[in-house]
Image (tube, rainbow over all chains, first blue to last red; front, side):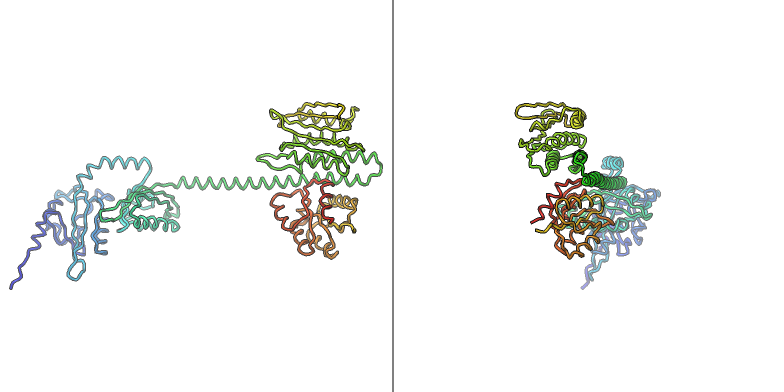
Length: 468
Length: 123
């Protein structure tokens, strides 16, 4: 019995769709007539030749015509045994007159498996999308202008095949000469900073694993062969084919200048913080030294006073020490508030009065608002209180309490009141006590109001909280 | 009652003299004056830890530190300190608190302040 023979070559030729058949060396073994018509070739032109020779790159369109991606796709099919659907590629067709016709395609490569399960052929089914691509040219041109204006480079990446199509500016950013970078992303990944590569790969892996992801972002550094580092920021969208294959489309921006500026700025800020810290340390040190020196002044006076025998001299010395203490004790209460040094007046006056009373069994009541004043205000107040109290406290057998109050009154005015026995009243003999009180009141720009009545003496000094 | 035994740890000699006069006038015993930590430890060692309180400056001579000296006195002989210094910021106070001082007096100090706090050690 004879086996009926089927003329498969004729069937292939007569297929109503354009088909090209390649062997595993990518050599053309056949084509449908529709394919030949589409590409304007004859079987004799192409059979027995590698597809890459039969359809050479258009020398005028170097960098645009894409033999690289085509080969990557075909080799991917050979390696995986899976069909591969390419994105739009430009592949110009040689003309009889020697020129090239500009053509755009979306080829699908399908493996054909022999009886032994091994791939024997690849069938290429090119879809000619030239017309729609050309129609979209105006939109493309707009996009290019926009990208250019924003200084953006555009790219397209297919993780499955590592196919990496991009505008020339991407190659420039990565430090590749035109044509040097090749059709796949591997050489580009190799120039990513090793510290950033894992996170970039991670983004790709996550996009592949999660069908809901539609946008992505990469920020990474490029290590140029010169050793220079370039910072780039990339944003993209995820496209998925009907078979769920992932393609990513995005833009890339050089942010090196911004990053360097940021780095310089944070360096400047750090330097500034250092200076502020140094200033604080110096200020604390100066403050400490000042306190120490003032303490030396008082201690020296006290050492000398203790040796004195003559009561009048001793009294004069004690007065001097008391006056000096009234001035310098302000420094013990100095503390930093925001940008300046202030004196906590309630605390200061309480301590000052306690020091003045000493061992004497006298009552001094301090009634002060929570008030902070600069030293140049605190010192005159301190002196006035010292002069009034020091005189009164020297008088024995006086029971009437002394009340010292410091209150905020309206309009940023502060009022110091000292009330108690008549002995508070400084003698009107032109002595130092009266003169110091008057001088300090004048220095504060304050108004003195005194009252001496049946129930005792009252001294009142109103002044502005801050110097005008 | 025997007089309170006080050691003065202060590297500024004028202040140490002033404190000594002040304490003697108040009836206390001054065990000795030290300018730095080794001197303070030597004095304490010499009297077998027989000190009731140490008046302690923060910045001592030759780079030694009052808080560390107070720590050593507390650990070796359980001697408490009264810190008298112009350098009593929050951090210093916090570190000093660990050694249970009897108090802190800022500089410039008054006799009253120092004697009042010392008085609390007499119990």
